[in-house]
Amino acid sequence: MDNLLSMEHLSEADIMRIIKRALDFKENGVQPFEEKKYIANLFFENSTRTKTSFEMAEAKLGISSIPFDVNFSSVSKGETLYDTCKTMEALGCDGLVIRHSENKYYEQLVGLGIPVINGGDGSGSHPTQSLLDLMTIYEQFGTFKGLDVVIAGDIIHSRVAHSNQQALEKLGANVVFSAPPEWQEAHQGDAYRVLDEALAEADVIMLLRVQHERHDIRARFTKDDYNRLYGMNMKRYDRMKKNAIIMHPAPVNRGMEISEELVEGEQSVIFRQMKNGVFVRMSVLTEILGSAG
Image 1 (cartoon, rainbow, N blue to C red):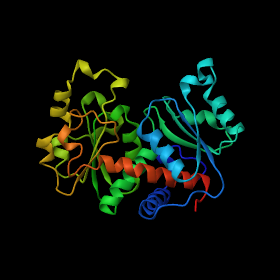
Image 2: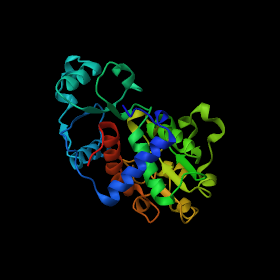
Image 3: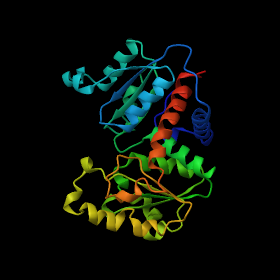
Image 4: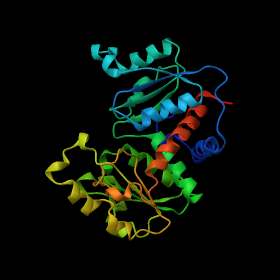
C-alpha cells in the first residue's frame, strides 16, 4: 500500500489485514523497525487523540517523529501545503501524517515521492479513525456481516460518518443514520431513522460529536435539548440490546451527544476505541513503511 487516503481505496482484504495485525500487536506486542524511520506529523487542525495516538504508535515502532507546529512554520509566510510536504521529503522523512481542513487536500500532493497517511480532511475522510472503530467492532462481535449499525448526530459535517459508512457497507454491515433534519445529507435519502426506533435493533450505536466549530447550533439546541431529542440518555440506554455497544470518536460533548453517566458505562467502548487507535496506527504505519520486527 503506497498511501492511506480514504476508506474508498481499501478493499475488504486490506481492511481485515490491517485490523488483524492491529489485534496481534495488542495481544503480542511488536518489535521496532530494524532500520531507522522518520515521520512528520503535519496537523493543520487541532487534535488530541489522532496526533498523540500516531506519536505513541511511532514511538512503539521505533520511528522518530519530526516536530512540526503550523503556528511556527513557513505556512504563515504563504508556503503551500505541497511545498511544506516536499520540504519534509527533501529533509529525509520517510512518510507524512497529515490533517487538514480542506477536503481531499491530498489531491494536490501527486508529485510527492513519500507516502501520505490521511489524519482527517475537512468533512471528507478519516480512515484511521474508521479502522480503529472497525477493530473495536470486530473485537466485540468477531464479524461485520449482518450487524445493524446506527450512526447518529452531525452527519453532514462528519468525516467519521462518511468513512465508516463506506467501510461498514463494504464489510457487510447494515448502516442507517439518525440526525436532525438540517444535518442530514439529501443523497442518503431513506437511510435516516428516528433514533428511538433504530436503536432497539442496533448492535452498534455510533454517536458523532456536534461540531460547534463548523456551525452555530446554539440558535436551535441547548445541550439538554439536544440530548433529549437526539442524544444517548438513560431512557434510550434502557431500550438498547444488552450486547450492543456505544461508540464515539471523541472529543465528547458530555451531556449532549451522550449523558455524563453513560460515557464510561458498561456498554460504552469509547475509551477502548482510543486505546485501539494506537494499535491500528501501528498497523497502518507497518503497512505503509514495511514490516517491523
